[in-house]
Image (cartoon, rainbow, N blue to C red; front, side, top):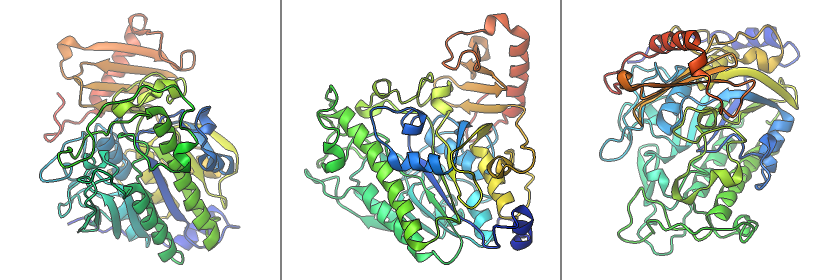
Length: 470
Protein backbone atom coordinates (compact mmCIF):
# COMPACT_ATOMS: atom_id res chain seq x y z
CA UNK A 1 0.00 0.00 0.00
CA UNK A 2 1.09 3.56 -0.60
CA UNK A 3 2.36 5.70 2.26
CA UNK A 4 -0.06 8.32 3.64
CA UNK A 5 1.52 11.75 3.79
CA UNK A 6 0.23 14.35 6.20
CA UNK A 7 -1.13 17.62 4.80
CA UNK A 8 -0.05 20.88 6.46
CA UNK A 9 -2.62 23.51 7.35
CA UNK A 10 -2.97 25.30 4.03
CA UNK A 11 -4.44 28.56 5.18
CA UNK A 12 -1.41 29.50 7.30
CA UNK A 13 0.91 28.76 4.40
CA UNK A 14 -1.19 30.66 1.89
CA UNK A 15 -1.51 33.75 4.05
CA UNK A 16 2.27 33.83 4.45
CA UNK A 17 2.68 33.19 0.74
CA UNK A 18 0.29 35.96 -0.36
CA UNK A 19 -1.52 37.83 2.43
CA UNK A 20 -3.82 39.64 0.01
CA UNK A 21 -4.93 36.48 -1.73
CA UNK A 22 -7.14 34.68 0.76
CA UNK A 23 -7.33 31.19 2.19
CA UNK A 24 -9.05 29.17 -0.54
CA UNK A 25 -6.94 26.57 -2.31
CA UNK A 26 -6.57 27.29 -6.02
CA UNK A 27 -8.11 24.93 -8.52
CA UNK A 28 -5.54 23.43 -10.89
CA UNK A 29 -6.10 22.55 -14.55
CA UNK A 30 -3.21 20.92 -16.41
CA UNK A 31 -3.79 20.83 -20.18
CA UNK A 32 -1.45 18.44 -22.00
CA UNK A 33 -1.56 18.48 -25.80
CA UNK A 34 -0.31 15.40 -27.66
CA UNK A 35 2.66 15.91 -30.03
CA UNK A 36 2.14 19.67 -30.28
CA UNK A 37 5.37 21.36 -31.30
CA UNK A 38 7.01 24.37 -29.66
CA UNK A 39 6.13 26.46 -32.72
CA UNK A 40 2.57 25.20 -33.28
CA UNK A 41 1.07 28.01 -31.17
CA UNK A 42 0.78 31.66 -32.04
CA UNK A 43 2.68 32.99 -29.03
CA UNK A 44 5.72 31.01 -30.21
CA UNK A 45 5.50 32.31 -33.76
CA UNK A 46 3.00 30.07 -35.58
CA UNK A 47 1.87 31.91 -38.74
CA UNK A 48 -0.41 29.45 -40.56
CA UNK A 49 -2.69 28.24 -37.75
CA UNK A 50 -4.72 30.52 -35.49
CA UNK A 51 -4.64 29.70 -31.75
CA UNK A 52 -6.38 32.70 -30.14
CA UNK A 53 -7.48 30.99 -26.92
CA UNK A 54 -4.09 29.46 -26.22
CA UNK A 55 -2.44 32.78 -27.04
CA UNK A 56 -4.77 34.50 -24.57
CA UNK A 57 -3.48 32.19 -21.85
CA UNK A 58 0.01 33.45 -22.65
CA UNK A 59 -1.13 37.09 -22.62
CA UNK A 60 -2.90 36.62 -19.29
CA UNK A 61 -0.18 34.52 -17.66
CA UNK A 62 3.49 33.60 -17.78
CA UNK A 63 5.30 32.03 -20.73
CA UNK A 64 8.27 29.77 -20.05
CA UNK A 65 10.70 29.97 -22.95
CA UNK A 66 12.96 27.14 -21.71
CA UNK A 67 10.62 24.43 -20.45
CA UNK A 68 11.00 20.77 -21.39
CA UNK A 69 8.96 17.60 -21.61
CA UNK A 70 9.92 14.54 -19.60
CA UNK A 71 11.31 12.88 -22.71
CA UNK A 72 10.45 12.60 -26.38
CA UNK A 73 7.55 10.08 -26.45
CA UNK A 74 4.22 9.73 -24.66
CA UNK A 75 4.25 7.26 -21.75
CA UNK A 76 7.66 8.02 -20.18
CA UNK A 77 7.12 11.76 -20.57
CA UNK A 78 3.83 11.48 -18.66
CA UNK A 79 5.50 9.27 -16.07
CA UNK A 80 8.04 12.01 -15.31
CA UNK A 81 5.17 14.48 -14.90
CA UNK A 82 3.22 12.32 -12.46
CA UNK A 83 6.19 11.02 -10.45
CA UNK A 84 8.42 14.10 -10.27
CA UNK A 85 11.37 12.08 -11.55
CA UNK A 86 13.33 12.42 -14.83
CA UNK A 87 13.47 9.64 -17.40
CA UNK A 88 16.55 8.02 -15.84
CA UNK A 89 14.72 7.55 -12.53
CA UNK A 90 11.00 7.39 -13.30
CA UNK A 91 9.15 4.04 -13.26
CA UNK A 92 7.85 4.05 -16.86
CA UNK A 93 10.62 4.71 -19.42
CA UNK A 94 9.14 3.53 -22.70
CA UNK A 95 5.95 2.87 -24.66
CA UNK A 96 5.63 -0.77 -23.61
CA UNK A 97 2.28 -2.25 -24.58
CA UNK A 98 0.62 -5.10 -22.66
CA UNK A 99 -2.32 -7.37 -23.43
CA UNK A 100 -5.21 -7.17 -23.79
CA UNK A 101 -5.19 -3.36 -23.86
CA UNK A 102 -2.90 -0.71 -22.43
CA UNK A 103 0.69 0.00 -21.46
CA UNK A 104 2.89 -1.36 -18.69
CA UNK A 105 1.40 -0.10 -15.40
CA UNK A 106 2.83 2.34 -12.92
CA UNK A 107 3.55 0.41 -9.73
CA UNK A 108 1.29 0.78 -6.72
CA UNK A 109 4.36 1.81 -4.72
CA UNK A 110 4.82 4.94 -6.87
CA UNK A 111 3.34 8.01 -5.19
CA UNK A 112 1.91 10.25 -7.90
CA UNK A 113 1.14 13.93 -8.24
CA UNK A 114 -2.57 13.10 -8.42
CA UNK A 115 -2.41 11.11 -5.18
CA UNK A 116 -0.63 13.97 -3.48
CA UNK A 117 -3.31 16.45 -4.53
CA UNK A 118 -6.11 14.07 -3.57
CA UNK A 119 -4.64 13.75 -0.08
CA UNK A 120 -4.41 17.56 0.01
CA UNK A 121 -8.20 17.70 -0.32
CA UNK A 122 -8.60 18.05 -4.09
CA UNK A 123 -11.25 16.40 -6.23
CA UNK A 124 -9.26 14.83 -9.07
CA UNK A 125 -10.22 14.01 -12.64
CA UNK A 126 -8.40 12.92 -15.80
CA UNK A 127 -10.01 13.18 -19.23
CA UNK A 128 -8.20 12.14 -22.39
CA UNK A 129 -5.36 9.65 -22.93
CA UNK A 130 -3.84 7.69 -20.05
CA UNK A 131 -1.26 5.12 -21.27
CA UNK A 132 0.20 4.27 -17.84
CA UNK A 133 -1.60 1.04 -16.99
CA UNK A 134 -4.60 -1.03 -18.10
CA UNK A 135 -8.00 -0.84 -16.50
CA UNK A 136 -7.95 -2.85 -13.26
CA UNK A 137 -4.14 -2.86 -13.02
CA UNK A 138 -2.18 -1.05 -10.36
CA UNK A 139 -1.55 1.62 -12.99
CA UNK A 140 -5.25 2.26 -13.56
CA UNK A 141 -5.85 6.03 -13.16
CA UNK A 142 -8.46 5.29 -10.51
CA UNK A 143 -5.73 3.56 -8.48
CA UNK A 144 -3.27 6.37 -9.11
CA UNK A 145 -5.17 9.15 -7.38
CA UNK A 146 -7.93 10.12 -9.80
CA UNK A 147 -11.56 10.15 -8.65
CA UNK A 148 -12.87 10.18 -12.21
CA UNK A 149 -11.38 9.10 -15.54
CA UNK A 150 -12.93 9.23 -18.99
CA UNK A 151 -11.16 8.59 -22.26
CA UNK A 152 -8.62 6.24 -23.84
CA UNK A 153 -6.84 3.95 -21.43
CA UNK A 154 -4.49 2.64 -24.16
CA UNK A 155 -2.38 5.11 -26.11
CA UNK A 156 -2.19 2.75 -29.10
CA UNK A 157 -5.98 2.83 -29.46
CA UNK A 158 -5.78 6.62 -29.10
CA UNK A 159 -4.32 6.70 -32.61
CA UNK A 160 -7.94 6.44 -33.73
CA UNK A 161 -10.32 9.39 -33.37
CA UNK A 162 -13.40 7.21 -33.98
CA UNK A 163 -12.62 4.26 -31.67
CA UNK A 164 -14.77 1.26 -30.84
CA UNK A 165 -14.85 2.26 -27.17
CA UNK A 166 -13.62 4.54 -24.43
CA UNK A 167 -13.42 3.98 -20.66
CA UNK A 168 -15.22 5.72 -17.83
CA UNK A 169 -13.46 4.66 -14.65
CA UNK A 170 -13.60 0.86 -14.94
CA UNK A 171 -16.63 0.75 -17.26
CA UNK A 172 -16.17 0.18 -20.98
CA UNK A 173 -18.15 2.69 -23.05
CA UNK A 174 -18.99 1.03 -26.36
CA UNK A 175 -19.06 3.35 -29.36
CA UNK A 176 -18.99 0.83 -32.23
CA UNK A 177 -17.56 3.45 -34.53
CA UNK A 178 -14.46 1.84 -36.02
CA UNK A 179 -16.40 -0.84 -37.89
CA UNK A 180 -18.59 1.77 -39.56
CA UNK A 181 -17.80 3.04 -43.02
CA UNK A 182 -19.14 6.47 -41.95
CA UNK A 183 -18.28 6.92 -38.26
CA UNK A 184 -20.13 9.73 -36.47
CA UNK A 185 -18.74 9.85 -32.93
CA UNK A 186 -15.61 12.00 -32.66
CA UNK A 187 -14.12 10.82 -29.40
CA UNK A 188 -12.33 14.05 -28.38
CA UNK A 189 -15.67 15.87 -28.39
CA UNK A 190 -17.13 13.28 -26.02
CA UNK A 191 -14.12 13.59 -23.73
CA UNK A 192 -14.41 17.38 -23.73
CA UNK A 193 -18.07 17.20 -22.67
CA UNK A 194 -17.12 15.04 -19.68
CA UNK A 195 -14.27 17.38 -18.71
CA UNK A 196 -16.51 20.44 -18.74
CA UNK A 197 -19.07 18.57 -16.65
CA UNK A 198 -16.35 17.76 -14.10
CA UNK A 199 -15.60 21.47 -13.68
CA UNK A 200 -19.30 22.20 -13.20
CA UNK A 201 -19.72 19.42 -10.67
CA UNK A 202 -16.71 20.47 -8.59
CA UNK A 203 -16.95 24.25 -8.82
CA UNK A 204 -17.42 24.63 -5.04
CA UNK A 205 -14.48 22.47 -3.99
CA UNK A 206 -10.82 22.68 -4.97
CA UNK A 207 -10.23 20.40 -7.94
CA UNK A 208 -7.34 19.11 -10.02
CA UNK A 209 -8.30 18.54 -13.64
CA UNK A 210 -5.78 16.69 -15.82
CA UNK A 211 -6.60 17.12 -19.52
CA UNK A 212 -4.25 14.91 -21.59
CA UNK A 213 -5.94 15.68 -24.92
CA UNK A 214 -5.00 13.49 -27.90
CA UNK A 215 -5.00 16.38 -30.37
CA UNK A 216 -3.10 16.89 -32.67
CA UNK A 217 -1.59 13.37 -32.58
CA UNK A 218 -1.94 11.20 -35.69
CA UNK A 219 -4.17 10.06 -37.27
CA UNK A 220 -5.06 13.25 -39.12
CA UNK A 221 -8.83 13.43 -38.84
CA UNK A 222 -11.46 15.97 -37.77
CA UNK A 223 -15.18 16.43 -38.33
CA UNK A 224 -15.93 18.37 -41.49
CA UNK A 225 -17.17 21.48 -39.72
CA UNK A 226 -16.28 25.17 -39.83
CA UNK A 227 -12.88 24.56 -38.23
CA UNK A 228 -11.90 22.27 -41.09
CA UNK A 229 -13.39 24.40 -43.85
CA UNK A 230 -11.47 27.43 -42.57
CA UNK A 231 -8.27 25.68 -43.71
CA UNK A 232 -9.43 23.47 -46.58
CA UNK A 233 -7.85 24.53 -49.89
CA UNK A 234 -5.57 27.01 -48.08
CA UNK A 235 -2.41 24.91 -48.51
CA UNK A 236 -0.85 22.76 -51.25
CA UNK A 237 -1.62 19.15 -50.34
CA UNK A 238 -0.06 15.71 -50.81
CA UNK A 239 -2.76 13.11 -50.03
CA UNK A 240 -1.82 10.41 -47.52
CA UNK A 241 -2.78 6.75 -48.10
CA UNK A 242 -3.37 4.94 -44.83
CA UNK A 243 -5.51 2.31 -43.09
CA UNK A 244 -9.12 3.39 -43.47
CA UNK A 245 -12.12 2.70 -41.27
CA UNK A 246 -14.16 -0.38 -41.94
CA UNK A 247 -14.63 -3.96 -40.68
CA UNK A 248 -10.95 -4.89 -41.11
CA UNK A 249 -9.39 -1.66 -39.86
CA UNK A 250 -6.51 -2.02 -37.41
CA UNK A 251 -7.12 -0.38 -34.06
CA UNK A 252 -3.88 1.59 -34.16
CA UNK A 253 -3.76 2.54 -37.84
CA UNK A 254 -3.94 5.96 -39.46
CA UNK A 255 -6.75 6.89 -41.82
CA UNK A 256 -6.13 8.07 -45.39
CA UNK A 257 -6.33 11.82 -45.71
CA UNK A 258 -6.86 13.88 -48.85
CA UNK A 259 -6.11 17.14 -47.02
CA UNK A 260 -3.43 16.35 -44.43
CA UNK A 261 -2.21 19.92 -43.94
CA UNK A 262 -5.67 21.44 -43.66
CA UNK A 263 -6.68 18.64 -41.30
CA UNK A 264 -3.66 19.13 -39.05
CA UNK A 265 -4.37 22.86 -38.88
CA UNK A 266 -8.00 22.12 -38.00
CA UNK A 267 -6.90 19.71 -35.27
CA UNK A 268 -4.75 22.39 -33.64
CA UNK A 269 -7.66 24.82 -34.04
CA UNK A 270 -9.96 22.31 -32.34
CA UNK A 271 -7.53 21.94 -29.47
CA UNK A 272 -7.54 25.73 -29.19
CA UNK A 273 -11.35 25.68 -29.17
CA UNK A 274 -11.32 23.19 -26.29
CA UNK A 275 -9.02 25.50 -24.32
CA UNK A 276 -11.44 28.35 -24.98
CA UNK A 277 -14.37 26.26 -23.75
CA UNK A 278 -12.52 25.46 -20.52
CA UNK A 279 -11.80 29.14 -19.91
CA UNK A 280 -15.36 30.10 -20.75
CA UNK A 281 -16.64 27.57 -18.22
CA UNK A 282 -14.34 28.96 -15.52
CA UNK A 283 -15.50 32.50 -16.23
CA UNK A 284 -19.16 31.49 -16.25
CA UNK A 285 -18.77 29.81 -12.86
CA UNK A 286 -16.85 32.74 -11.42
CA UNK A 287 -13.77 30.67 -10.53
CA UNK A 288 -11.27 31.76 -13.20
CA UNK A 289 -9.42 34.13 -10.85
CA UNK A 290 -8.51 31.38 -8.42
CA UNK A 291 -7.75 28.65 -10.96
CA UNK A 292 -4.22 27.90 -12.12
CA UNK A 293 -4.33 26.81 -15.77
CA UNK A 294 -1.21 25.26 -17.30
CA UNK A 295 -0.97 24.56 -21.02
CA UNK A 296 1.81 22.45 -22.53
CA UNK A 297 2.61 19.40 -24.70
CA UNK A 298 4.01 15.94 -23.98
CA UNK A 299 6.85 16.11 -26.56
CA UNK A 300 7.78 17.55 -29.93
CA UNK A 301 5.80 17.32 -33.19
CA UNK A 302 5.15 13.99 -34.89
CA UNK A 303 5.57 13.03 -38.55
CA UNK A 304 3.10 10.12 -38.76
CA UNK A 305 -0.11 9.82 -40.77
CA UNK A 306 0.81 12.46 -43.33
CA UNK A 307 1.77 15.19 -40.84
CA UNK A 308 4.19 17.79 -42.15
CA UNK A 309 5.84 19.66 -39.24
CA UNK A 310 8.40 21.31 -41.54
CA UNK A 311 5.64 23.00 -43.54
CA UNK A 312 4.11 24.48 -40.39
CA UNK A 313 7.46 25.19 -38.71
CA UNK A 314 6.09 23.17 -35.80
CA UNK A 315 9.47 23.20 -34.07
CA UNK A 316 9.60 26.98 -34.08
CA UNK A 317 13.07 26.92 -35.61
CA UNK A 318 14.32 24.19 -33.26
CA UNK A 319 15.92 21.07 -34.70
CA UNK A 320 14.23 17.68 -34.44
CA UNK A 321 10.87 16.04 -33.91
CA UNK A 322 9.24 13.49 -31.66
CA UNK A 323 11.76 10.70 -30.82
CA UNK A 324 14.66 13.15 -31.05
CA UNK A 325 16.52 14.57 -28.06
CA UNK A 326 17.31 17.66 -30.06
CA UNK A 327 15.48 20.74 -28.79
CA UNK A 328 12.59 20.22 -31.21
CA UNK A 329 11.85 16.84 -29.65
CA UNK A 330 11.76 17.93 -26.02
CA UNK A 331 11.35 21.71 -25.69
CA UNK A 332 7.66 22.51 -25.47
CA UNK A 333 5.24 25.41 -25.16
CA UNK A 334 4.54 26.02 -21.46
CA UNK A 335 2.19 28.68 -20.09
CA UNK A 336 0.81 29.25 -16.59
CA UNK A 337 -2.24 31.46 -16.09
CA UNK A 338 -3.25 32.26 -12.51
CA UNK A 339 -4.61 35.81 -12.29
CA UNK A 340 -4.62 35.92 -8.50
CA UNK A 341 -0.86 35.40 -8.37
CA UNK A 342 0.93 35.33 -11.76
CA UNK A 343 1.64 38.60 -13.58
CA UNK A 344 -0.06 38.84 -16.96
CA UNK A 345 2.15 38.96 -20.03
CA UNK A 346 5.26 37.86 -18.16
CA UNK A 347 8.03 35.69 -19.59
CA UNK A 348 10.35 33.43 -17.62
CA UNK A 349 13.70 32.12 -18.88
CA UNK A 350 13.87 29.62 -16.02
CA UNK A 351 15.03 26.23 -17.33
CA UNK A 352 12.55 23.65 -16.07
CA UNK A 353 11.03 20.29 -16.96
CA UNK A 354 8.02 18.09 -16.29
CA UNK A 355 9.50 16.62 -13.12
CA UNK A 356 9.35 20.11 -11.58
CA UNK A 357 5.54 20.19 -11.65
CA UNK A 358 5.14 17.76 -8.70
CA UNK A 359 7.26 19.78 -6.23
CA UNK A 360 5.66 23.02 -7.46
CA UNK A 361 2.19 21.70 -6.68
CA UNK A 362 3.30 20.20 -3.36
CA UNK A 363 4.73 23.56 -2.28
CA UNK A 364 1.69 25.40 -3.59
CA UNK A 365 -0.69 23.26 -1.56
CA UNK A 366 1.49 23.18 1.56
CA UNK A 367 1.90 19.42 1.53
CA UNK A 368 5.65 19.54 2.08
CA UNK A 369 8.64 17.91 0.45
CA UNK A 370 9.26 14.34 -0.67
CA UNK A 371 12.58 12.53 -0.64
CA UNK A 372 11.90 10.63 -3.87
CA UNK A 373 11.33 13.80 -5.94
CA UNK A 374 14.13 15.00 -8.24
CA UNK A 375 12.37 18.11 -9.49
CA UNK A 376 12.62 21.69 -8.24
CA UNK A 377 9.62 23.88 -7.51
CA UNK A 378 9.27 26.85 -9.86
CA UNK A 379 6.71 28.55 -7.62
CA UNK A 380 9.09 31.43 -6.94
CA UNK A 381 9.27 32.10 -10.67
CA UNK A 382 5.48 32.23 -10.79
CA UNK A 383 5.07 34.53 -7.80
CA UNK A 384 8.16 36.69 -8.29
CA UNK A 385 8.90 36.22 -4.60
CA UNK A 386 12.14 34.76 -3.35
CA UNK A 387 15.09 33.44 -5.31
CA UNK A 388 14.35 30.73 -7.86
CA UNK A 389 16.54 27.68 -7.39
CA UNK A 390 17.99 26.50 -10.70
CA UNK A 391 18.92 23.02 -11.89
CA UNK A 392 22.64 22.33 -12.25
CA UNK A 393 21.58 20.44 -15.39
CA UNK A 394 18.65 18.55 -16.94
CA UNK A 395 18.86 14.92 -18.11
CA UNK A 396 16.86 12.86 -20.61
CA UNK A 397 17.10 9.34 -21.98
CA UNK A 398 15.23 7.58 -24.79
CA UNK A 399 15.08 3.81 -25.14
CA UNK A 400 14.53 3.42 -28.89
CA UNK A 401 16.83 3.80 -31.93
CA UNK A 402 19.83 2.36 -30.10
CA UNK A 403 19.33 4.53 -27.04
CA UNK A 404 19.93 8.25 -26.64
CA UNK A 405 20.92 10.42 -23.70
CA UNK A 406 21.06 14.18 -23.37
CA UNK A 407 22.18 16.79 -20.85
CA UNK A 408 21.46 20.49 -20.82
CA UNK A 409 23.81 22.42 -18.54
CA UNK A 410 23.47 26.17 -18.81
CA UNK A 411 23.75 27.03 -22.50
CA UNK A 412 25.42 23.70 -23.34
CA UNK A 413 23.58 20.68 -24.70
CA UNK A 414 25.20 17.25 -25.18
CA UNK A 415 23.57 14.25 -26.87
CA UNK A 416 24.96 10.71 -26.86
CA UNK A 417 23.73 8.44 -29.65
CA UNK A 418 23.93 4.61 -29.71
CA UNK A 419 24.07 4.82 -25.93
CA UNK A 420 23.09 1.17 -25.51
CA UNK A 421 26.28 0.16 -27.32
CA UNK A 422 29.11 2.19 -25.85
CA UNK A 423 31.58 0.77 -28.39
CA UNK A 424 29.57 2.51 -31.12
CA UNK A 425 28.49 5.66 -29.32
CA UNK A 426 28.52 9.06 -31.00
CA UNK A 427 28.50 12.51 -29.39
CA UNK A 428 27.13 15.88 -30.38
CA UNK A 429 27.57 19.10 -28.40
CA UNK A 430 25.93 22.48 -28.96
CA UNK A 431 26.01 25.94 -27.44
CA UNK A 432 22.31 26.84 -27.42
CA UNK A 433 22.98 30.53 -26.84
CA UNK A 434 24.99 30.86 -30.03
CA UNK A 435 23.38 27.98 -31.91
CA UNK A 436 19.73 27.41 -30.83
CA UNK A 437 19.11 25.31 -33.94
CA UNK A 438 21.83 22.81 -32.94
CA UNK A 439 23.67 22.90 -36.26
CA UNK A 440 27.30 23.38 -35.24
CA UNK A 441 28.57 20.26 -33.46
CA UNK A 442 31.39 21.25 -31.08
CA UNK A 443 32.00 17.82 -29.55
CA UNK A 444 35.41 17.42 -31.19
CA UNK A 445 36.63 20.70 -29.71
CA UNK A 446 35.23 20.24 -26.20
CA UNK A 447 36.53 16.86 -24.99
CA UNK A 448 36.71 17.90 -21.32
CA UNK A 449 33.13 19.13 -21.40
CA UNK A 450 32.02 15.88 -23.03
CA UNK A 451 33.71 13.90 -20.24
CA UNK A 452 31.81 15.94 -17.65
CA UNK A 453 28.52 15.42 -19.49
CA UNK A 454 29.21 11.68 -19.64
CA UNK A 455 29.77 11.55 -15.88
CA UNK A 456 26.44 13.26 -15.28
CA UNK A 457 24.67 10.89 -17.68
CA UNK A 458 26.12 7.85 -15.96
CA UNK A 459 25.07 9.24 -12.59
CA UNK A 460 21.52 10.16 -13.64
CA UNK A 461 20.74 6.84 -15.31
CA UNK A 462 19.55 4.25 -12.80
CA UNK A 463 19.15 0.89 -14.46
CA UNK A 464 15.63 -0.60 -14.61
CA UNK A 465 14.89 -4.30 -15.05
CA UNK A 466 11.62 -3.36 -16.80
CA UNK A 467 13.26 -0.91 -19.19
CA UNK A 468 16.93 -2.03 -19.46
CA UNK A 469 19.34 0.42 -21.01
CA UNK A 470 22.89 -0.67 -20.29
